Image (cartoon, rainbow, N blue to C red; front, side):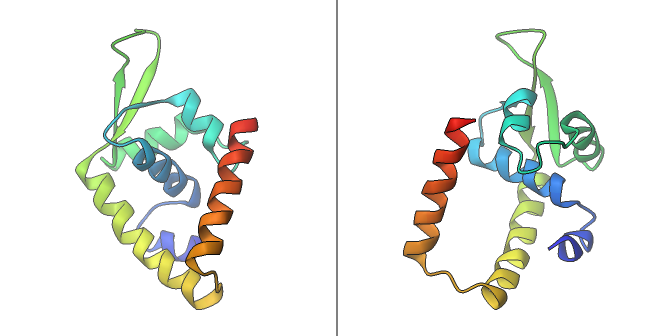
Length: 118
């Protein structure tokens, strides 16, 4: 998967952040929530966001509710990048993993339960 993402100039961690943001789009997401939802818990989320912002895939703002908090949202370029890379990754997974829609949905529900416990 990293090889496929590298073709587009993003890392697995950056892709993960884009997916997290897409799950809440068009709402903004605070950096702390992104960090909690990351697959790799040791990831340096502010650094990842810096790189995504440099690539104009995300936009960083100050929260309207709490001026101390930074919130992130996807840009149109970020949405486009996510669509392209997700399509590429889906093809890769379809070629290597056979998971029907029912099992994929069950797996997703289990992962959500795990995330809720964190």
